[in-house]
Length: 305
Image (cartoon, rainbow, N blue to C red; front, side):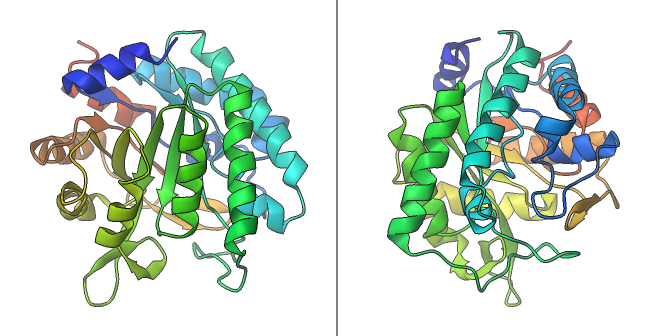
């Protein structure tokens, strides 16, 4: 399905329902997660499971599905010496998503700035950095690989800073595809919201930088539900375009998601109504959420009667 229907809904301010967590739902269905690349290898080893996750989100009412390309980060795969594998896995992931979509909904390619992570934690190895010129070249290749694979749009996910995330978003916009910018945030010790795992990057400055790139949507995503309302207010200081919200639930210990205290679908709907009052019109879920959460959102916002 072309992106045109989604573009019309955006222009009219209508509600759009996204999918939920892709990688975590793949894990929940019994697929082992790789020690260094999380759910990336599932595209090659368990394509039927990946396809079934996408199909179930469409049945639940998702109007866009996101290919399983979040973990094929250009930074992570470069650090592992697997640049060519990134392109190969992206092609397969988008192919699987398009097979599941069957032209019913558009397919988004997920683009992250995930870096190598310590086992058993959710923090990057801070000692691994890239010079800007080198990083921009890697970002360009990732963006082009997802465009060449057949993505209808690019979802920037877990954007968290105004260095790597900015370079990645600019590369995505340069493809000419629609770009939806998903920002992740958390409070540092003094309560200030910052980029996730980037206490040196205040959220207001991250938003201000990313809002100038030419993206089509800004969402707060992979963020605990109780922080999203305040984060949306900060986004509105720099962005008057379409606004979205899709939270995480549970927590990560590389390479496995911990399904602990997962938000109930009805509670997610209650939060989403609050976010709608704050100006959001795009709702879904991130890590830890599943098709039941999307079904609840779709019913609540009229996608499914």
